[in-house]
Image (cartoon, rainbow, N blue to C red; front, top):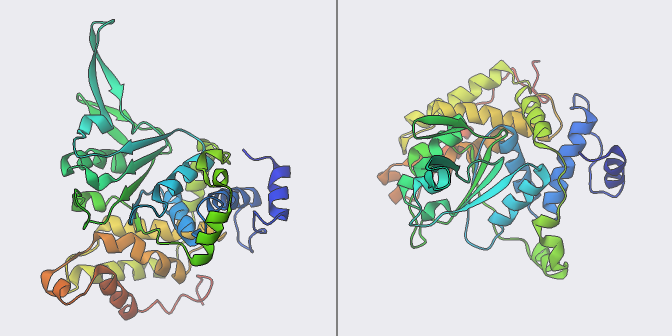
Length: 345
Protein backbone atom coordinates (compact mmCIF):
# COMPACT_ATOMS: atom_id res chain seq x y z
CA UNK A 1 0.00 0.00 0.00
CA UNK A 2 1.27 3.51 -0.82
CA UNK A 3 1.53 5.86 2.21
CA UNK A 4 -0.75 8.93 2.14
CA UNK A 5 2.24 11.27 2.21
CA UNK A 6 3.69 9.66 -0.93
CA UNK A 7 0.31 9.85 -2.66
CA UNK A 8 0.15 13.57 -1.92
CA UNK A 9 3.71 14.13 -3.16
CA UNK A 10 3.08 12.32 -6.45
CA UNK A 11 -0.12 14.34 -6.93
CA UNK A 12 1.80 17.60 -6.41
CA UNK A 13 4.49 16.60 -8.91
CA UNK A 14 1.89 15.80 -11.57
CA UNK A 15 2.24 12.00 -11.44
CA UNK A 16 -1.26 11.79 -9.98
CA UNK A 17 -4.26 13.79 -11.24
CA UNK A 18 -6.38 15.85 -8.85
CA UNK A 19 -9.35 14.43 -6.97
CA UNK A 20 -12.40 13.43 -8.99
CA UNK A 21 -15.65 15.23 -9.49
CA UNK A 22 -18.87 15.01 -7.53
CA UNK A 23 -20.33 11.51 -7.28
CA UNK A 24 -16.80 10.11 -7.38
CA UNK A 25 -15.31 7.21 -5.50
CA UNK A 26 -13.42 7.67 -2.21
CA UNK A 27 -10.28 9.70 -2.76
CA UNK A 28 -7.86 7.00 -1.61
CA UNK A 29 -9.12 4.38 -4.10
CA UNK A 30 -9.22 6.95 -6.91
CA UNK A 31 -5.67 8.05 -6.16
CA UNK A 32 -4.34 4.51 -5.99
CA UNK A 33 -5.85 3.61 -9.36
CA UNK A 34 -4.49 6.74 -11.04
CA UNK A 35 -1.07 6.16 -9.49
CA UNK A 36 -1.02 2.62 -10.89
CA UNK A 37 -1.83 3.88 -14.38
CA UNK A 38 0.71 6.70 -14.07
CA UNK A 39 3.47 4.22 -13.26
CA UNK A 40 2.55 1.98 -16.19
CA UNK A 41 2.47 5.03 -18.47
CA UNK A 42 5.99 5.91 -17.35
CA UNK A 43 7.20 2.66 -18.94
CA UNK A 44 4.92 2.38 -21.99
CA UNK A 45 5.08 5.91 -23.38
CA UNK A 46 2.21 7.60 -25.18
CA UNK A 47 -0.37 4.84 -24.64
CA UNK A 48 -2.44 6.26 -21.78
CA UNK A 49 -5.76 5.46 -23.51
CA UNK A 50 -4.74 1.84 -24.03
CA UNK A 51 -3.58 1.55 -20.42
CA UNK A 52 -6.94 2.88 -19.19
CA UNK A 53 -8.77 0.34 -21.35
CA UNK A 54 -6.70 -2.56 -20.00
CA UNK A 55 -7.28 -1.46 -16.40
CA UNK A 56 -11.01 -1.15 -17.11
CA UNK A 57 -11.14 -4.71 -18.46
CA UNK A 58 -9.27 -6.09 -15.46
CA UNK A 59 -11.39 -4.12 -12.99
CA UNK A 60 -14.44 -5.64 -14.67
CA UNK A 61 -13.05 -9.10 -13.91
CA UNK A 62 -12.22 -9.82 -17.54
CA UNK A 63 -9.23 -11.02 -19.54
CA UNK A 64 -7.44 -9.12 -22.29
CA UNK A 65 -6.11 -10.18 -25.69
CA UNK A 66 -3.40 -7.89 -27.09
CA UNK A 67 -3.03 -8.40 -30.82
CA UNK A 68 -0.32 -6.55 -32.74
CA UNK A 69 2.93 -6.88 -34.61
CA UNK A 70 6.11 -7.79 -32.66
CA UNK A 71 8.08 -5.11 -30.89
CA UNK A 72 5.40 -2.54 -29.99
CA UNK A 73 5.33 -3.25 -26.24
CA UNK A 74 2.66 -5.88 -25.63
CA UNK A 75 4.75 -7.92 -23.20
CA UNK A 76 6.18 -4.76 -21.66
CA UNK A 77 2.67 -3.52 -20.86
CA UNK A 78 1.67 -6.76 -19.12
CA UNK A 79 4.87 -6.90 -17.06
CA UNK A 80 4.36 -3.31 -15.93
CA UNK A 81 0.75 -3.96 -14.90
CA UNK A 82 1.78 -7.06 -12.97
CA UNK A 83 4.43 -5.06 -11.09
CA UNK A 84 2.14 -2.25 -9.90
CA UNK A 85 -0.56 -4.72 -8.84
CA UNK A 86 1.66 -6.79 -6.60
CA UNK A 87 0.73 -10.42 -6.11
CA UNK A 88 2.28 -13.29 -8.06
CA UNK A 89 3.11 -13.00 -11.76
CA UNK A 90 3.94 -15.81 -14.17
CA UNK A 91 4.65 -15.89 -17.87
CA UNK A 92 3.81 -18.74 -20.25
CA UNK A 93 5.74 -18.68 -23.53
CA UNK A 94 3.52 -20.65 -25.90
CA UNK A 95 5.22 -22.80 -28.52
CA UNK A 96 4.08 -25.34 -31.10
CA UNK A 97 5.14 -28.33 -28.96
CA UNK A 98 3.48 -27.21 -25.71
CA UNK A 99 0.94 -29.59 -24.14
CA UNK A 100 -2.10 -28.76 -21.98
CA UNK A 101 -0.36 -30.19 -18.91
CA UNK A 102 2.44 -27.66 -19.38
CA UNK A 103 -0.15 -24.93 -18.76
CA UNK A 104 -2.54 -26.44 -16.22
CA UNK A 105 -0.17 -28.77 -14.41
CA UNK A 106 -0.43 -32.50 -13.88
CA UNK A 107 0.63 -35.55 -11.97
CA UNK A 108 4.35 -36.35 -11.81
CA UNK A 109 6.16 -39.21 -10.10
CA UNK A 110 7.85 -38.28 -6.82
CA UNK A 111 10.67 -40.79 -6.33
CA UNK A 112 11.24 -39.88 -2.68
CA UNK A 113 7.60 -40.28 -1.72
CA UNK A 114 6.99 -43.16 -4.11
CA UNK A 115 3.75 -41.74 -5.44
CA UNK A 116 2.23 -39.42 -8.00
CA UNK A 117 1.90 -35.82 -6.86
CA UNK A 118 0.25 -32.85 -8.53
CA UNK A 119 2.65 -30.27 -9.93
CA UNK A 120 1.05 -26.86 -10.28
CA UNK A 121 1.13 -25.25 -13.70
CA UNK A 122 2.01 -21.61 -14.36
CA UNK A 123 -1.69 -20.65 -14.24
CA UNK A 124 -1.47 -20.63 -10.44
CA UNK A 125 -0.77 -16.90 -10.19
CA UNK A 126 -2.64 -13.61 -9.83
CA UNK A 127 -1.47 -12.16 -13.16
CA UNK A 128 -0.62 -14.55 -15.99
CA UNK A 129 0.94 -13.52 -19.30
CA UNK A 130 0.06 -15.94 -22.11
CA UNK A 131 2.74 -14.80 -24.54
CA UNK A 132 2.19 -15.50 -28.24
CA UNK A 133 -0.86 -17.61 -27.44
CA UNK A 134 -1.55 -18.35 -31.11
CA UNK A 135 1.84 -20.03 -31.57
CA UNK A 136 0.44 -23.16 -29.93
CA UNK A 137 -2.19 -25.54 -31.40
CA UNK A 138 -5.88 -25.23 -30.42
CA UNK A 139 -5.65 -28.26 -28.13
CA UNK A 140 -3.29 -26.41 -25.81
CA UNK A 141 -5.11 -23.09 -26.26
CA UNK A 142 -8.28 -24.75 -25.01
CA UNK A 143 -6.54 -25.68 -21.75
CA UNK A 144 -7.22 -22.10 -20.69
CA UNK A 145 -11.01 -22.27 -21.16
CA UNK A 146 -11.93 -23.49 -17.67
CA UNK A 147 -9.42 -21.19 -16.01
CA UNK A 148 -10.72 -18.11 -17.83
CA UNK A 149 -14.40 -18.71 -17.10
CA UNK A 150 -14.52 -20.72 -13.88
CA UNK A 151 -11.27 -19.51 -12.24
CA UNK A 152 -10.34 -23.15 -11.65
CA UNK A 153 -8.48 -26.02 -13.29
CA UNK A 154 -9.23 -29.74 -13.28
CA UNK A 155 -6.45 -32.31 -13.03
CA UNK A 156 -6.91 -36.05 -12.48
CA UNK A 157 -10.60 -35.47 -11.75
CA UNK A 158 -9.92 -32.91 -9.03
CA UNK A 159 -10.94 -29.26 -9.35
CA UNK A 160 -8.43 -26.76 -8.01
CA UNK A 161 -9.33 -23.12 -7.49
CA UNK A 162 -7.01 -20.47 -8.91
CA UNK A 163 -5.65 -17.63 -6.76
CA UNK A 164 -7.84 -14.55 -6.42
CA UNK A 165 -7.69 -12.23 -8.18
CA UNK A 166 -6.85 -14.10 -11.39
CA UNK A 167 -6.18 -12.11 -14.56
CA UNK A 168 -5.03 -13.50 -17.90
CA UNK A 169 -3.44 -11.15 -20.42
CA UNK A 170 -2.56 -12.82 -23.71
CA UNK A 171 -0.50 -11.52 -26.61
CA UNK A 172 -1.14 -12.63 -30.16
CA UNK A 173 0.69 -12.19 -33.43
CA UNK A 174 -1.31 -11.25 -36.53
CA UNK A 175 -2.72 -14.37 -38.16
CA UNK A 176 -0.86 -13.65 -41.40
CA UNK A 177 2.42 -14.52 -39.60
CA UNK A 178 3.85 -17.99 -40.23
CA UNK A 179 3.32 -20.62 -37.55
CA UNK A 180 0.17 -19.15 -36.02
CA UNK A 181 -3.11 -20.88 -35.21
CA UNK A 182 -6.42 -18.98 -34.96
CA UNK A 183 -8.01 -19.03 -31.52
CA UNK A 184 -11.25 -21.06 -31.27
CA UNK A 185 -14.46 -18.99 -31.15
CA UNK A 186 -15.20 -20.29 -27.64
CA UNK A 187 -11.89 -18.94 -26.39
CA UNK A 188 -12.20 -15.58 -28.14
CA UNK A 189 -15.58 -15.18 -26.46
CA UNK A 190 -13.90 -15.48 -23.06
CA UNK A 191 -11.65 -12.48 -23.64
CA UNK A 192 -13.47 -9.38 -22.44
CA UNK A 193 -11.45 -7.10 -24.72
CA UNK A 194 -9.18 -7.39 -27.72
CA UNK A 195 -6.86 -4.39 -27.98
CA UNK A 196 -4.03 -3.23 -30.20
CA UNK A 197 -0.99 -1.34 -28.93
CA UNK A 198 -0.04 0.34 -32.20
CA UNK A 199 3.14 2.15 -33.14
CA UNK A 200 4.24 5.10 -30.98
CA UNK A 201 4.03 8.66 -32.26
CA UNK A 202 7.23 10.27 -33.52
CA UNK A 203 7.54 12.35 -30.34
CA UNK A 204 7.08 9.35 -28.04
CA UNK A 205 9.59 7.26 -30.00
CA UNK A 206 12.18 10.04 -29.74
CA UNK A 207 11.48 10.34 -26.01
CA UNK A 208 11.88 6.57 -25.65
CA UNK A 209 15.35 6.80 -27.20
CA UNK A 210 16.32 9.74 -24.99
CA UNK A 211 15.28 8.17 -21.68
CA UNK A 212 17.80 6.07 -19.82
CA UNK A 213 17.14 2.37 -20.59
CA UNK A 214 16.64 1.40 -16.94
CA UNK A 215 13.64 3.75 -16.68
CA UNK A 216 11.78 1.63 -19.22
CA UNK A 217 12.20 -1.67 -17.35
CA UNK A 218 8.96 -2.75 -15.58
CA UNK A 219 10.84 -4.63 -12.87
CA UNK A 220 11.99 -1.28 -11.44
CA UNK A 221 8.38 -0.27 -10.77
CA UNK A 222 7.17 -0.57 -7.19
CA UNK A 223 3.85 -2.26 -6.32
CA UNK A 224 1.05 0.14 -5.46
CA UNK A 225 -1.51 -2.23 -3.94
CA UNK A 226 -1.89 -5.78 -2.69
CA UNK A 227 -4.24 -8.35 -4.27
CA UNK A 228 -6.88 -7.90 -1.55
CA UNK A 229 -7.10 -4.19 -2.35
CA UNK A 230 -7.55 -4.96 -6.05
CA UNK A 231 -10.44 -7.31 -5.22
CA UNK A 232 -12.12 -4.45 -3.36
CA UNK A 233 -11.66 -2.19 -6.37
CA UNK A 234 -13.24 -4.84 -8.60
CA UNK A 235 -16.26 -5.02 -6.29
CA UNK A 236 -16.57 -1.24 -6.33
CA UNK A 237 -16.38 -1.16 -10.14
CA UNK A 238 -19.14 -3.75 -10.47
CA UNK A 239 -21.41 -1.68 -8.20
CA UNK A 240 -21.41 1.33 -10.57
CA UNK A 241 -25.00 2.28 -11.39
CA UNK A 242 -26.34 1.50 -14.87
CA UNK A 243 -29.65 3.10 -15.90
CA UNK A 244 -32.26 0.57 -17.02
CA UNK A 245 -32.62 2.42 -20.34
CA UNK A 246 -28.92 1.83 -21.03
CA UNK A 247 -29.37 -1.87 -20.31
CA UNK A 248 -32.16 -1.93 -22.91
CA UNK A 249 -29.94 -0.08 -25.37
CA UNK A 250 -27.13 -2.61 -24.90
CA UNK A 251 -29.47 -5.55 -25.48
CA UNK A 252 -30.85 -3.91 -28.64
CA UNK A 253 -27.36 -3.38 -30.06
CA UNK A 254 -26.31 -6.94 -29.30
CA UNK A 255 -29.56 -8.26 -30.78
CA UNK A 256 -28.88 -6.33 -33.98
CA UNK A 257 -25.49 -8.06 -34.34
CA UNK A 258 -27.22 -11.44 -34.29
CA UNK A 259 -29.46 -10.54 -37.22
CA UNK A 260 -26.91 -8.50 -39.23
CA UNK A 261 -26.74 -9.77 -42.82
CA UNK A 262 -22.96 -9.34 -42.91
CA UNK A 263 -22.35 -11.63 -39.94
CA UNK A 264 -22.44 -15.39 -39.58
CA UNK A 265 -22.02 -15.07 -35.83
CA UNK A 266 -23.02 -12.10 -33.70
CA UNK A 267 -22.40 -11.29 -30.04
CA UNK A 268 -23.25 -13.80 -27.32
CA UNK A 269 -25.06 -13.16 -24.01
CA UNK A 270 -21.60 -13.29 -22.44
CA UNK A 271 -20.68 -10.35 -24.67
CA UNK A 272 -23.67 -8.37 -23.38
CA UNK A 273 -22.62 -9.02 -19.80
CA UNK A 274 -19.00 -8.14 -20.53
CA UNK A 275 -20.02 -4.94 -22.33
CA UNK A 276 -22.00 -3.70 -19.33
CA UNK A 277 -19.21 -4.63 -16.91
CA UNK A 278 -16.62 -2.92 -19.10
CA UNK A 279 -18.76 0.23 -19.21
CA UNK A 280 -19.08 0.17 -15.41
CA UNK A 281 -15.33 -0.19 -15.01
CA UNK A 282 -14.71 2.60 -17.53
CA UNK A 283 -16.91 4.88 -15.43
CA UNK A 284 -15.01 3.77 -12.33
CA UNK A 285 -11.66 4.62 -13.95
CA UNK A 286 -13.08 8.05 -14.79
CA UNK A 287 -14.08 8.51 -11.14
CA UNK A 288 -17.86 8.24 -11.64
CA UNK A 289 -20.47 6.18 -9.81
CA UNK A 290 -22.76 5.90 -12.86
CA UNK A 291 -22.47 4.85 -16.50
CA UNK A 292 -23.03 7.37 -19.31
CA UNK A 293 -23.71 6.49 -22.97
CA UNK A 294 -20.12 7.31 -23.95
CA UNK A 295 -18.89 4.52 -21.65
CA UNK A 296 -20.81 2.04 -23.81
CA UNK A 297 -19.70 3.67 -27.06
CA UNK A 298 -16.02 3.59 -26.07
CA UNK A 299 -16.04 -0.05 -25.02
CA UNK A 300 -18.26 -1.47 -27.79
CA UNK A 301 -15.57 -2.34 -30.34
CA UNK A 302 -12.91 -3.72 -27.92
CA UNK A 303 -15.54 -5.90 -26.24
CA UNK A 304 -17.54 -7.19 -29.21
CA UNK A 305 -15.77 -6.96 -32.57
CA UNK A 306 -13.47 -9.95 -31.98
CA UNK A 307 -16.49 -12.17 -31.28
CA UNK A 308 -18.04 -11.65 -34.72
CA UNK A 309 -17.60 -13.85 -37.78
CA UNK A 310 -18.04 -11.91 -41.02
CA UNK A 311 -19.59 -13.96 -43.83
CA UNK A 312 -17.71 -14.56 -47.07
CA UNK A 313 -19.77 -12.16 -49.15
CA UNK A 314 -19.16 -9.23 -46.82
CA UNK A 315 -15.50 -10.12 -46.40
CA UNK A 316 -14.95 -10.12 -50.17
CA UNK A 317 -16.47 -6.63 -50.27
CA UNK A 318 -13.93 -5.47 -47.71
CA UNK A 319 -16.35 -5.26 -44.79
CA UNK A 320 -14.83 -6.01 -41.37
CA UNK A 321 -16.40 -6.65 -37.97
CA UNK A 322 -15.68 -3.11 -36.79
CA UNK A 323 -17.54 -1.68 -39.80
CA UNK A 324 -20.64 -3.74 -39.02
CA UNK A 325 -20.58 -2.72 -35.38
CA UNK A 326 -20.17 0.95 -36.28
CA UNK A 327 -23.21 0.76 -38.55
CA UNK A 328 -25.30 -0.86 -35.83
CA UNK A 329 -24.26 1.68 -33.19
CA UNK A 330 -25.29 4.46 -35.56
CA UNK A 331 -28.62 2.83 -36.37
CA UNK A 332 -29.69 2.06 -32.79
CA UNK A 333 -30.63 5.31 -31.04
CA UNK A 334 -29.54 6.12 -27.51
CA UNK A 335 -32.63 6.10 -25.25
CA UNK A 336 -34.23 9.53 -24.91
CA UNK A 337 -34.60 8.99 -21.16
CA UNK A 338 -30.83 9.33 -20.82
CA UNK A 339 -29.26 12.77 -20.62
CA UNK A 340 -25.71 13.87 -19.99
CA UNK A 341 -24.66 12.37 -16.68
CA UNK A 342 -26.52 9.14 -17.27
CA UNK A 343 -29.69 10.16 -15.39
CA UNK A 344 -33.37 10.42 -16.20
CA UNK A 345 -34.79 13.76 -17.31
